[in-house]
Image (cartoon, rainbow, N blue to C red; front, side):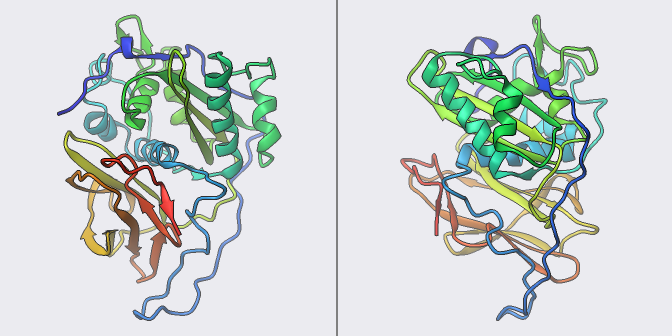
Length: 332
């Protein structure tokens, strides 16, 4: 059963923010593939890539990253597949119709820390604004964590649907509701959408916090103009609970050519993932199965056109947080 999102269920700040700064290009060195694996394919995944650091990111934060990259790679297709049940209608407003596809954002620990700290601050201290509840300017808070670029931006949201759904927050930001409709592209009220589709950003940190307060669930996206993560083709991966009764696993793949395969390895079994959005060389791959009632470990493996194998995360197993009673995000 799908849920139709309505404005009454969630509040969204009317102002998105982007700081002035000199646009910095993405940085981060390349990593040479190590020796071939036992299977005969060289593995290009850098050690530690996609592995949570100090509890960052959590499942919802990772899912927001994957969904943000999915809409950046294929705006209209994302709208029509993953936001079609949103009310008011994004498609009726032609939302995302004039935004071209742009490159993926790489996860950044500092931005993740900044975003989560702000979500927690809003929930614990009872404010709903970009500046910290104690009055610290939003840009000073972000740059106290993030040092790679002075080009930064932020989206925030708060609301109380249960369970807290990353796709819900995405749809609210992409709609940028104005009156009884979603904002039209370039109409001046689509700031959250513009932030998510801005080609000048290279990095993203997403922050989620749940607090027993008026809005309960708090979401933050912090954007940066430079990334420090290696530009590997298997960018990221996570899961969402969509459509009703299903768990869908998503992975973003970006390379100079199509992969030979993209697979989900769930509880030790391989499942072929199909192209869901975008192009084979620059798109989102998906696999949907019936949702269960307990944690299941998983990771993603992609074999690029040259035969190099990429794993996300580089080690350990993601967990199906939210499936039944599962409260785990990742295990070594």
